[in-house]
Image (tube, rainbow, N blue to C red; front, side, top):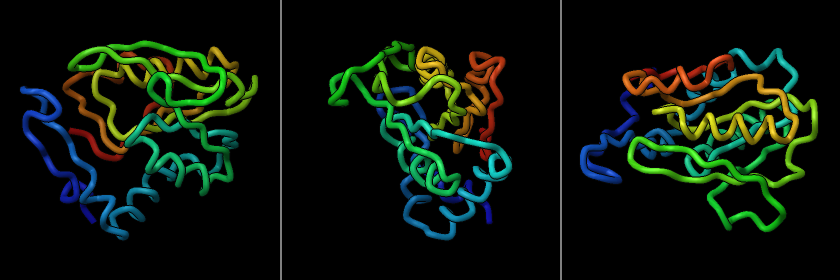
Length: 170
């Protein structure tokens, strides 16, 4: 199965000049989701994973499934003001602006082994902020996991020295 056929390009979304990679066709196809999960789990099954972080909002789709399959807890990381308990925050730059993410202060215990998951690795800003949050809480980053990587934006460079995996690379 070629997962690329389930990724739809949307020009000028969310702002002019951005080519958005829409994963909703993939999410609507159970066989594509199953294949995607097999790829995302491929090098994680033999590792001890305590938590899987999912970045709001498209990172939630596969992060919850990964957590379930790995027998790990799921940690939502959200935009400011969306989490009800005490939070830590990290700000970052996007390819089209700036943003901030927050995590509950008790979401990860020191020494817990964490996989970070988001749908797309673009400039690396979001993932780097998530790494900062995990480390602020004392977690150990096992891998930064993405459905797809936009390699021309060089986001992987911001994630050195963490292992990075994305089954789809554009």
